[in-house]
Image 1 (cartoon, protein in one colour):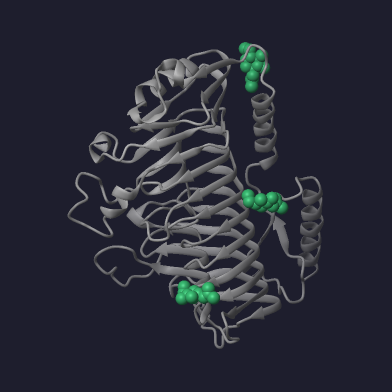
Image 2 (cartoon, protein in one colour):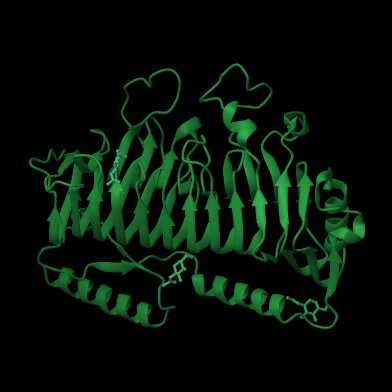
Length: 460
Ligand SMILES: *[C@@H]1O[C@H](CO)[C@@H](O)[C@H](O)[C@H]1NC(C)=O
Ligand SMILES: *[C@@H]1O[C@H](CO)[C@@H](O)[C@H](O)[C@H]1NC(C)=O
Ligand SMILES: *[C@@H]1O[C@H](CO)[C@@H](O)[C@H](O)[C@H]1NC(C)=O
C-alpha cells in the first residue's frame, strides 16, 4: 500500500508540474484507468496523470510562427492573384484553370507566397487538387471572396471524393473571412441514404469531402465560412500539426452526411472557437487520430461531437488523447458520443469531455459499442473495439429524451475506467432522466444525475 501511495504522489506532483509548464489550456490531464490500477477514486481525488502524447507546444510555436509571417509578410513576399490568371469571379464562368495555374505559380515559388482570392467576387470551381510539396516555405491563401463548387455531377467523375483538396501541402495558412460553398443540394437529393438509384458513379462507401487536407503538416485554417458541402465540409486526413479556428460551418439540418469537421489518421490537431451547424456530426474523430483537442465549439443542429465510428472495414486504428473542452450543443441528436462497430480490434482511450453545456440534446452522453450503420442488420457479435479511460466532467443541461446517459458496452470488452464528475442532465421540461449502463466499469465523483439504477459490471 505504501508503494501505491508514493506512486500516487509522484503522479500528482508530475501532473501539477506539467500543467504549469504548459499552455493555459493544455495538455489536459487524463483519467488513468483507476479501476485497473486499483485506486479508489472516491478516496483519492487526484488521480489524473498527463498523457504522454506529442507536444502541443511545438505545434503552437510553429503555427504562431506561420501566422506572424502570414500577417507581417516580408517585402520579398510574392503575391499571386487568381485574377491575374484569368479568373473572372462572375459566378458564371468556370474559373478552375485560373486557380490551378495560380496555385502552380505560388507553389513553385521560393520563399513566402500569398495566393489571393479577391473580395466581392464569387468563383465557380470544379474539383481542384492543390498538390505539394511546394518550393515555397510558407503558402498563405487569403480567401476574401467566395469559392463555389460546380453543381454538375459530371465534373466529379474523375476524383469522386474531393472538391478542393490540399495534398502534401505543408506550411500552409488559409484565412481571409471568405466563403467556401460546396453547393451541395444536388448531392443531398441524390444521397445514397435518400435515393439509392440516382447516385451513379459515386462510391457510397466513401464520403465526399468539400475542403480536404491530406498528408499535410503545419496547417492553420482560420476565419472562414464553409457551407453547404456535398458531404463532409472540412476533412483532415493523415495530417500533423493543425490549428483550425474561427470557422463557421453551416448546412441544412436535413442534408445527409454533411459532417462539419472530420479528423482521421491525424496527429496533433486543435480545433477552436468554431460554430458548426450541419446535418451530420459536428466534429467526427475517427481511425488513427491522436492528440485531438476541440475547444470552445458550438454545435447544432446536427449529430453532435463523435468519436468513431471506429472499427468498420476491419481496420486496426486506435484513437487516443481526445479532449473536448468548452462546448455548447443545441438540439443535436447526440451530445458527446463514442461509437464503435462490432467485430474489430481497435482502442478508443484517454478521452476527456469537460465543461460542456447541452440544450435539448437527444442523447447527451453515449457510448455505443454496438454501432451499426449499413443496409443489412449487423450480425450480433461481440465488439473487439475497446473503450478505456473516458472522463466526463462538468457537463450540464437538458436532454430531449428520457435517456440522458447511455453506456452500451459489450460483454466481451466492457468499457473500462469511465469516470463521471459533476455531470447532471435533466429531461427538457421535466425533471426525470434515466441512465443505462451495460458492461461498464464506472466511477463517480461530485453530483451525478441521472445515475444508473443497477449496473451490470462484467468481470473481464
Ligand atoms: C522562407 O525563406 C525566406 C527566404 O528564403 C526566409 O527569409 C524566410 O525566413 C523563410 N520563412 C520560413 C517560414 O521559413
Ligand atoms: C468561442 O467561440 C466563439 C465563436 O467563434 C467566439 O465568438 C468566442 O469569442 C469564443 N470564446 C472564447 C472564450 O474564446
Ligand atoms: C427539443 O427537441 C425535441 C426533439 O428533437 C423537439 O421536438 C422539441 O421541440 C425541442 N424542444 C425545445 C424546447 O426546443
